[in-house]
Each structure stands twice: as structure tokens, then as C-alpha cells.
Length: 156
Picture 1 (cartoon, rainbow, N blue to C red):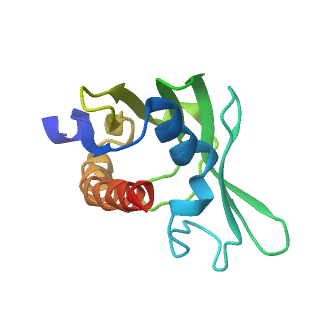
Picture 2 (spheres, one colour):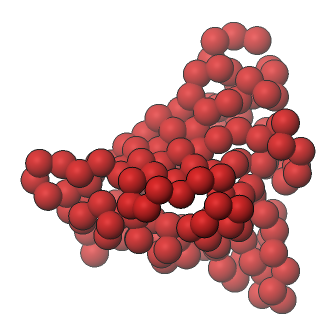
């Protein structure tokens, strides 16, 4: 295993929202900006869920109401930070084993112009060994694209 698997992925965007507004849109409005084709396990996801409470759900719901988790919410410090357990394998299948989870931390820092710097760090790929390197590469591009989509929604 190389250092790539142990290095986290970090992406950030600036939005012209206060930290409260930025947090609300990213977390409470998760379903508004997450792409409809951003499903990891359901072919026809109806809704995407991120509950801003410790132990909260993070995943997707199908049209029949079936819930498919991606992980869970580990910690919330509104409007500064949310920490998520990513419980998807390198093949993007759900694995409930907490020993195999990686972490996604999103922070909201006020900027001098009144906006907010939103930074997402995904770390812990080493739990998957060599496949963790591939996972890291895959999510690096994905998170950057998703944060840009979030920033576009914030600007709308």
C-alpha cells in the first residue's frame, strides 16, 4: 500500500452564504443539490437524505420508501461542521462494519467577504488496503464535481 491510500481527499468551494445558510443548504437541503443520478445502490432513487443529528441517516430512498444507507452521521456542530461515516466499499456497496468505514468531514468557515468556505475532506482509505487507493482516486473527482454542483445551487 502506498501513501496515496492514507492521504485524504480535500476539496473546497466558496459560496456567498453565511455559514448558517451554507450548512442549511448542504445538509438540510441535501436533496435539492445532490444529482438525481447520484445513486449508489438504488436504480430509481426518490430522495437523498442527510439528517443533521448524531446517528442520523445518510443515504437514499427508493420510490417504495426503501432506505439504502451510505453511512451515518457521526457528529454535528451546526453551522461549523458535520462528520459522516462513509460505509461504502471500494465497489460502492454498503458495508455496515464500522471497522471498514471512512470519514467525510465538511466544515463551514466564514470568509471576510461575508461568504463561507465549505471544505470537504474524505479520509481513512487505508482501511481498504490496496483497493483504498482506487477508492481515493474515484471519490477525489466525484467530490469536486459534487461541491461545484452545491456551489451552483448556492448561487441560484
